Every structure is written in structure tokens, then in C-alpha cells.
Length: 247
Image (cartoon, rainbow, N blue to C red; front, side):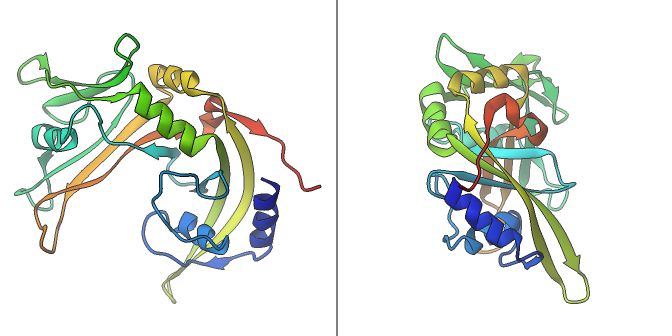
């Protein structure tokens, strides 16, 4: 962690830094390049066993912890999309499904409500879907196993570095700039704490599924990711803050 802190101070001293990536997550990707690390989507931590999380100041409060599709059966995400997706406003011929699910039933479309349920007996986190048209729960099982959730959580997030970032966009030159403000180090409290936070609604699940708009796959399902998320203000519930300094 001291090595990362030294590298962060070096980057911080550079002040405003030109964006070196494109699209969503470009602040984090630019940071990885500044740390001389290739950009990837690996399930392993980003830097020497430490997961890096950047958040632009004044942006959406939720921080993605890790991504993991429903794992109880093959093609569960496809079933969810086909069953619960709604027609896109942009192109009604195709479906989209964008929901953020917590511990209480919330109606995310005319037909369906969603909630998370931690089932300790079966050792799964269930995605419960209520069909208002039929006044019943969807019977098809949709869940994540404790085993796979624990492995993903402890592999990815035993140690975390959380970084606040300022962003400035130059409309004349059409270029974004980032300023990496501060860094905080954390250690995971444990899987049981993770489950309790799911039960209480502090950790939520965001599901984003759309369709390919161009190319050979046009019209086919495009799974943008299913992410377990937490409000950045609640990081202390899941992680223990560490006091790291350079000797």
C-alpha cells in the first residue's frame, strides 16, 4: 500500500491530467495507465492486490463493488431479459432492462417489482421478481450462491483504495481532464458483513441489459453487467479504514 501511496502522490502532483481513455470509467482507466498498468476487466484486484475505485466528485453516489451475473443456471440473464425487459423508447422492436434492486419490493416497470432476499438455509442470495399482471412471484429460480459471491468478494476486494476525482471538460478542445484529489485505504470486514448489508438494503444490485444497435449482433441481447453496489458514504459499513503513511 505504501508503494501505491507513493505513486498516487506522484500522480497528484501532476495536477490536471488529460483523459487517456474513452467512455464510462475513463477516470479509473486513466489512473491505471498512469500507474503503468494495462487496462483490463479482470476479476483480480487492480494493483498489487489492491482494488482501485475512482469516483468523480458530485457524480452518482453508488460505487460498484464487483460484477457477477446470476449463477444458479445457465442463461439466467437471458431468461430475465426476455421475461422482464420492456420495449426500448429508442427502438420499440427491442428490449432493455435497467433496474436497481434492494431489500424491499420496488416496482421498476408497469408489470414487475424486484427485491433481494438472503436465503441462509439454501446459501443463496435470491432475486425475487413479482409479476403484477398475474399477482404472483416468478417461479423460475434467480440467484447467486454464497460460495461464488464469497470467492468474488474476497478475491477482488480484500483491500480497497478509494480515490476522489475532479473532472473538467474543455468544450473548445473537446478534451476532458482529471485531478486526483485524495486516496483512502480500506480492508474488507468480511463476507458475513456483506450479507447483512444486502439484508439491510445498504448494498444493492444494479442490472443493465440492452441490445446491440449496430453490427452483426444488431438486435441481440447486450449484457452491460450486473453490479453489486454501495453508496460511497456507507463504505465504512463494509470496510475498515486503514491509516497508511510513507515511512
